[in-house]
Length: 300
Image (cartoon, rainbow, N blue to C red):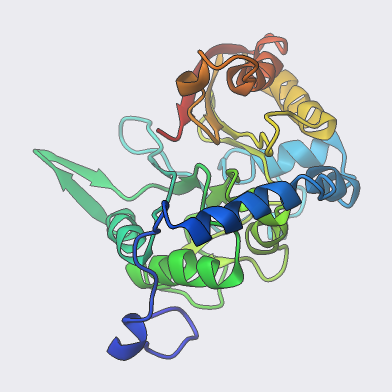
């Protein structure tokens, strides 16, 4: 059950969402209206940046806060969870995107992510020390009921919170997809960038401050998550953010760049900017002259 919630009866579970009926005329009409209305919202990436006027040093501190060798002037500011490499020097992460059309599919994947260990053939894979959500955290659109019933509840049940009320736990970071943007990103920001208290997604904890992020995993490996909004564009504060991170990395660093849509599917569509937006962020790493490799990780 979700931390702090009462158990849900079988009768209540019967009312939980099934798979989304994408070809239902009423749903298509609602989504069309959401697309039209969403274009009228102010760009909340700019609003969040304006409300978070921090120095480049603070950006770096946030990006390196889980890297155990990062110095903190005040140790009380250090998160209680850090990335600990295994005997091979690797830090394991879990990545999930297009989280699921309904409760059942979302819970099925979340239950795999929540296991301490997952057996795949002869391999035993540990649960990731970081969970990255790569876009479209809810379907068909951003709505409080959908967020709770199709994201928060199934993830809380799949990985019951072992330390309710405490900050210890693997971090979860998310980037928004177009379906998260259909309310102008209001609910995504309310859940994932909450400063206090942090979102407890079962045993996972959100330490995110904006809809995009950079995190140092090891001395040379980083993961970046970008927000392309609905119009396949990068706002200037986001570009400035990744420029600052790119110039601060150790030489020969490597980046896993996460985007919110499969740009390679749209390469033949005239005027589509999906891959150019990804290139824009990748250049933040390359121009910093500290990056030797960029690997793209996007929803399929």
